Image 1 (spheres, rainbow, N blue to C red):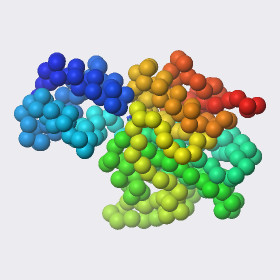
Image 2 (image 1 turned 30 degrees about the vertical axis):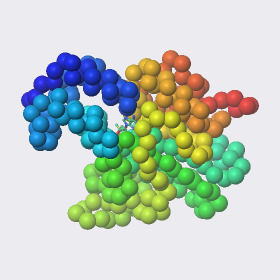
Image 3 (image 1 turned 135 degrees about the vertical axis):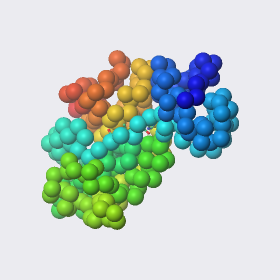
Image 4 (image 1 turned 180 degrees about the vertical axis):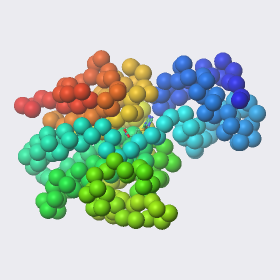
Length: 272
Ligand SMILES: C[S@@+](CC[C@H](N)C(=O)[O-])C[C@H]1O[C@@H](n2cnc3c(N)ncnc32)[C@H](O)[C@@H]1O
């Protein structure tokens, strides 16, 4: 395994923290183990030479490759089902009653391979049923992993990855694809728009969101980064809207949202 010089490691930690908010301070061994073979495969025999390529790549492709190797895109359907339950039983009844123009905006921030936003689309379909046509139901799904976004847009999943789905949903929302895989049906797939977005950047989406899912993403961020990201989410949330974070994650100390339950936060005010 290649080793990274302390000086190079400190520079890399600072670079990644500034650009992506990821905290790798105590992760020298992880960096070496996840990147060594890749650095050698790229034809370099030292981290220093490889990192020069990363820092000087104006297309940012190489930094994206590196980040993909350092973070986990692990995700699955029906993950942390308490959120889907809250969405169906509390959030959607509120949204149905209060959103006068019938345009519902939901954001899956850090969507990985798309299981989460597709799961959200399925919940919307179940909830609205025949009333669905009267609504404009928009789901934006973003990530920094080009690889995950590409896979997500294809909407193809292995049989094992949809195991947790209720049978009825599996039959209704997936069709058979090649090699025993399953494909999300078009009506659900077309409900989700996938885009690259780095949570460290400012939010320039046109509309505010009624619900933001940002689960198992901020686990990599330090307190200062979490605080900045949550403030950006807050400013991009409609009053009365919600933020869901992962159950294993902690909110920043200066969380602007009101905590409703574990991992469920709400933007209150204006009589809400
Ligand atoms: C473990 S997955 C979580 C997927 C899904 N939200 C879930 O809970 O199953 C974490 C995702 O966060 C993404 N991510 C990490 N840092 C990010 C950043 N700065 N901006 C946007 N996405 C980021 C990673 O690429 C990865 O796909």
